[in-house]
Image (cartoon, rainbow, N blue to C red; front, side, top):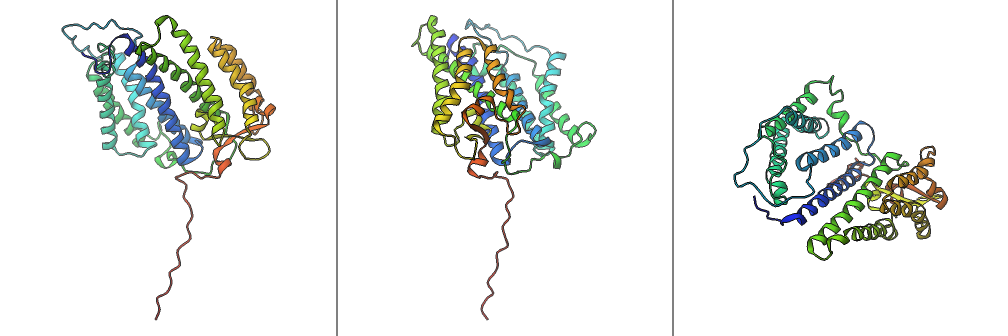
Length: 359
């Protein structure tokens, strides 16, 4: 099979770095949209919203992984026959596509025909990506499965919808309990929400730097032996942009990951944007040690810094970390800063009084 988007080892390295970056970016946009529409993700609807995100990521992983790190560019003259359907492939397809049907019914309230069409489309996309070697980025199809696996995925999607519809013992909450209700997002964010924003930041930072290095290497601007130095420089440069420049420029003083979950960095006394000197001090105490330790290949020591910061956040009602206490800042929701309301919040409008017609 040919390669419409590039050829050789360079295209493979770009794909290995860019696909995770696209997944993290899509996750950030999804979280941002959910928080804008419904406010904080709480209760059973919030868990289903996160489950929908994990299901989408699982489908992406199922379609493209494992990504080979290298390829010789040679393909067989005669394409190999499709492998037979194995129990492992069928069980994996069942585990991946079953949540699609469950969530389509219980979280998004879709009908059987819409769910069946969605499962069919997703199964065909997975087969296409695998059969073309990630749409031609790889020389050959590297992770082929039997075409019957698509049928198993469609059947699993329909089975998940039926379980959510007819088996309340397996799925006890009906569609009305699973649909999120928009509420004002004013209370202090919990630790899980803050950790989710931190994970998005780390994904954008690491995979963004890796994608940049792969693109630079594919262009031939850097010799192969110098890629480690380029990666170190890219990590440091993106850390400065994400953790320092963007928070200083944004009104909510947030990093990209925190902005995705609608968080803001404010003064500790009142809900107003934290001053720039306080943001600089917090970055020096929290982000700089973590970035330097990860860049030097010492991630476990970076986890120790994060644990030290979170030691006070887990016991304080306002969730203030150690660096927050030292610098006099607090992590609050963005709604508490600018007073905005969720987009799906039902707003009361008084009835309009009609003027009587003149006699």
